[in-house]
Length: 396
Image (cartoon, rainbow, N blue to C red):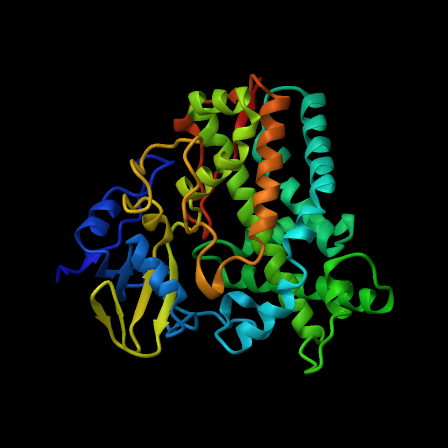
């Protein structure tokens, strides 16, 4: 291991590739010391095997004392039971088990017709209005918003507000007052929804959770509000980013767009390659060692922080041959776009189904789709937790 403390590479020169220098850091030392925007020094883990090892190790906690990716390093108050992102075992294990019952592969597959309907309706409207169109505002954002809102039974008139709230809270350095106000708005809306579902259960996820066998009395109002808020915001923002960014990539790689247009059966492998190539958790997850842990031959002491950099890991040549090449015919890899271990994304099957329907339908319905501006003019979400594109002007 090199003893040099490097500044973690964060600035991209190509919008579809990791920051230059990240591969060199990984190749030189997959576990190394680095400095972060907060000014703190911590461990940076970039190798695929090493990131997987850290993600699955229970000796790493998600409850970190300092926020490495923000300029002030302040860790904001995290929600309690029901928020899987910020929990450790045993609470995390118990709560995930309760929620996982509602995210089975079978239940997610049953959502296909509704997802197809939502996708078709938005593409119908885009076609009706004619070119040019912003694929982000007209398609990439509203489709996952509608899908997850249907799953939770969010009233139609409140759905635009959920989109606004997601924008307010998902920045790397959000305005504290704006983020707090957005969180309060979300909490108030969800409290009303929970009371409504208790009085009038429906065919939605909140009603299903209320009706779950809960001998320990965990699923109270606060649990439901926290779980619903976390899943709504995370599922909406991540999938919207992948649709927008994946579309931009396909349209910038017309050879790959043509492959999918000519052979729709490639959509499954295309989605998996997009997930690997465009791992949108662009800065890496933060962890705290609760005991001494050895990762990749390096001893990480109890009390030291680490960043597990999934984007760097998904471009590791140990994972795939020629990782810098985007190839939708590539055999699906063990990418880390959904994480790994106890905190692996609980909604990954829904995301996969949604992305498969989105890209198969988009390419089929608009076979002549192309960028309306040069890729150099696109504005990307460099300042957000999840990477994506702000606007995507297209024509056909």
